[in-house]
Length: 510
Image (cartoon, rainbow, N blue to C red):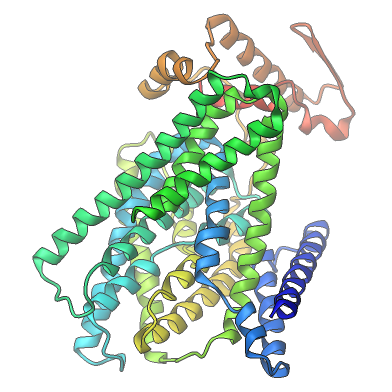
């Protein structure tokens, strides 16, 4: 068994290495019609097929098949934590109302349309499978998860404009946590449970309890980390400082899982709190170390996940019900439409004209509802015959959205001219502060961090930002002001940095 386990690891790491080299080739040659997500899945599928056809060892096959526990307890938490920790918080707060509306209300709309659509099709016997209402609700919940891993990989590679990226990615991250909580909620009911008013209200109560409890645990551990670093001198030992940051984040995840809550929601909010407060208490060395290490481990985890998905195509015995697959796919597209367009219309009512979501952005939001490994991992929870059918249906929809929708994303962004350009970044100017950010700067930041920015410090940071943007705008080869100097070649003008990464982060939060 030890030899087989070693062979499986060799296969995985060879594939990851090959995926990284392929990513280098695609990026260096600027190949846009093929994205890294799809190539990793394809590599996994090819090797999975070779193992299935050539290996007589069931143990080797079992080692390389998709393991939902490894995914949910090891790989996914690291990616979600990185999403919260390295999130561009300026774009996060600017677009928060948009993607929170899409994530919370939109996920519920999507779940109801898919679930009740399947219940209707079962009653009129259109899909050939006698799914129970509980099965339909679980499937409607898991297939509503627009996978942040797929969205992040594709949109980052294509350099989507940051506001559109944050709307889609922010919705995906929150939507993922909500979908997981919904599935956990419906799993608590008996398979033969009838769809009654009591069932609905009990489900709502369980959902709110699990989600809010998970957020509370993640936030508590995030604030705890901030206060720990503020009131100790652990920053004198950067390695220990970074280690504690990781350990407390993972503690929030496993504690939430241990008491029946959502570890994913917990570690996401722990990451957001750590980025907003704890980061300010870290030494300069640890600030760089944590950001780079978290990003590295998340990238490796993403590669594992997509290769795992490719293996899943041949490592399971599938039960194809093509009517169910077709109707489920149509319901996914329909529910996404009623998720995006009505909610965006409501969102735009309360926005200034310059901050409204444009028609072409609405279409991208609808089109970018990619399903991924999260939906597939949740489908493995059901182990009976209906579970196998739903697992096959989920995997088929995942492949369709990643390869077809994901493959056409780049031409769509080019057609709508939504790729990020440096000229899109407006010159920094004083903005009207929201009440929360004002309260945060005056009271929360001083309480949880060492930072106490007065007016002089704020003015200095804003001057630096304005000068940095003037360098970029006017292509100065040499720019001198406020006691600092920039002397750069023309090819480096757009990379001019007067603000440190830490100061940039601070300015975003003001």
